[in-house]
Length: 128
Length: 338
Image: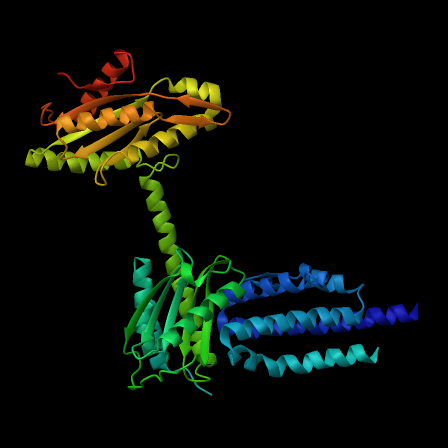
């Protein structure tokens, strides 16, 4: 019982961490390439990674921004490692798309912000 | 770290202005291609336009062919990564314009390869209509400010291209009959005004053939409106293929069509009409499980033979001749008799 509560707590922490990271990615990259292109790239990435991590399909993206409440709700009943792997794959896929389009220009901007947070998530998952 | 200067912003404004004042796709692409070197250093600038598909490249004149091919390949690759159906190189209508793009007289190495690029989709209302790409033989050529500028240009190009695309759709719908793809009556009236004015002024020939499908109601009653529409489309196509390029073929209304033949004297017009009548008579219309034969009646009027004084009279006389053809038992051609 206690273990279950702890796992739920970690899941919340990890999903919070990634939700904030995605918000940060949105803010930074939309300033570079605009919301319309970024929406398209997010939706492409979600479609691809959502095939494996279905909880990501509830992530809604429009030119107004990211709607993250549903995906956070969906994470509550998932193991932290699964959430971490799903979000990490999504961010990797986004980075891949950014690189294909602009080579290092976007990723160079993003890496210093993204990497520490992904590592933090990794630490949280490995502690478990 | 490179900073954006006022000079850069002014250049950006000029480019946007050039793009947004263009009224056709080619103009937009050309405006972008010719004004971009003031703001970006590149070996090749490419615009991939999904319709066609068409790929326009503006490149440094010393750009080697292998570099061009690499750019084309890369743009098509990125386009498919964006979730679009892959486009084969062979299908692309490639247009290359060479010029001196760089201020400094840099000649490209014949062995040059693509070292850096910025490729962005042209997105409007969630739809990708193409992509644009800056390509260089120099490594790390592009940075954050250039990317921001390039994306602003991309948005402007996408909006302008979409605007033109919509405008051409509206223009098409205003001219053509959606069922038969022939000109609609409104456009026919415009053509009639122009051609009759020309003929009346120069005393040159102008002939009109009015066509009506015999017993069309029976087709609709037997095979439903889908069957009727199929017959209308097929006859429209037969009519279109039976006349010269500069003749006007239009759907006049319901099962009635009209042909306007500038410069055509009465006798050749009669021969055309007779040929069309026989063609329709000998055509088998496939209506699913049944095959049917259909006939048409045709009425002809001609300027100056029938001495009409207005375009309305030209129409009225062809219509009266058509009435005579119907009255005479259908499946025939009648010339107006005053």
